[in-house]
Image (cartoon, rainbow, N blue to C red):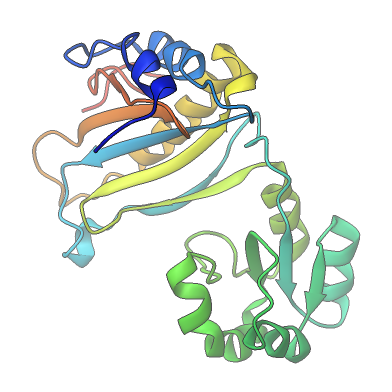
Amino acid sequence: MKHGKKYVESAKLVDRANLYETAEALELAAKTATAKFDETIEVHVRLGVDSRHADQQVRGAVVLPNGTGKDVRVAVFAKGDLAKAAEEAGADIVGDADLVQKIQGGWMEFDVAIASPDMMGFVGRLGKVLGPRGLMPSPKAGTVTMDVAKAVVEAKAGKIEYRLDKSNIIHCPIGKASFGTEKLQENFNALLDAIIKAKPAAAKGQYIRSCTVASTMGPGVRINPNRVGSGAVAE
């Protein structure tokens, strides 16, 4: 794979054989974000689990203390008083069967979908559309709930969902390069603490196998997997 000049120059700042401490890694990731836009800092965590087994799934959601730096567009499937509560909480669009039809027609201008439980009969029709995009409301992620107002506020504040992919890796954004090391580390710790807390009972051996941070267009910076999270040590 051929990289551009900026990537090559940025990569020279990173020792690929080294396992960095979190703060240093995040500082490097932000430093190597040389694009003209404010790049997102991403975390990639490989876990010692097997996602093919139901009892080794790792999935959940966490509110990042400093948000993601992104203006999150929220769609809510609700009606009556819950629809009104969602609107007052700041949802960008609220609807029931009409919103389902709008999405079936190709409209996808939202980043998070939230639904009240009574609406899932309608929302289920959108599984093939929302599922592959990671937008399907889920009780585990807190996006199927009676308290739609709280879910909207959390989504706007920087709540992100984490889940294993087929390679047993979790990929998540933790903010923008412009945040600075301190805010990025607070967000990083919140995410890693949640992932560590979600460790399945069936998981054996080392849980956090590897951890890498990178800006959108920059090189990966490897973090010591035994020194992640606010506790600094992962089992």
